[in-house]
Image 1 (cartoon, rainbow, N blue to C red):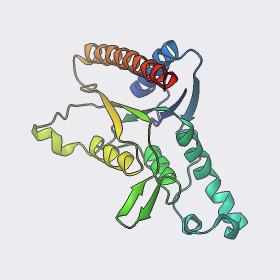
Image 2: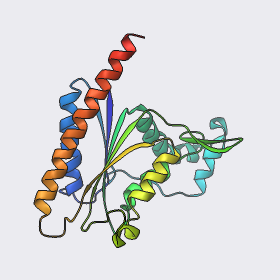
Image 3: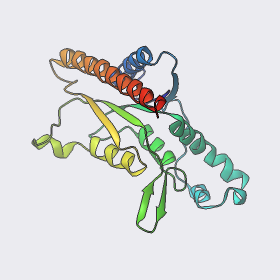
Image 4: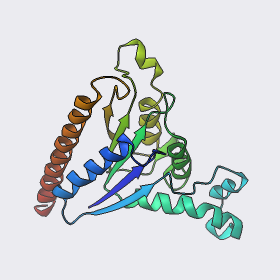
Length: 215
């Protein structure tokens, strides 16, 4: 089992970093032999999409040295994504949306021929069988059915773009109202939810592995 831990906050002591660390701690309890791949986007040089991105439409044998060098970051990030069974993403809300490093990571992993393709019926995802947990931190709250919902450009976008490449089994864990009184109890409740969800996933994996042995 492999867990890919992605942190995108620019702050070393951010809430989302503490919560993804909590998730990893709980995951290790349930998967003691598992491997954790850590990807800190604040310390990763993530190229912008430039003219060299056109190399993604070429056969590998046609790539120039400059294109190969440029695409090497994308190759590595996609390999990490493909290798993982479980993915946990720490995503603080900045200005109602996601941090720029997380958007830059998305731009590198949403790649034709690697994570999505096109067929007779249009676009098709190339990733599957992965469980994704997105842990967010928000100054306010944006529950569905309230006026605040329309200001949430974080969960809808992430759910859509992850689903586009085949990551459809996504659970969002929101640490909300972190800029208001009562943030502490809310944070404690999120930590408990993380422990519960990690334990449930561990049980599901154990049950699945047991069933496979009897096939």
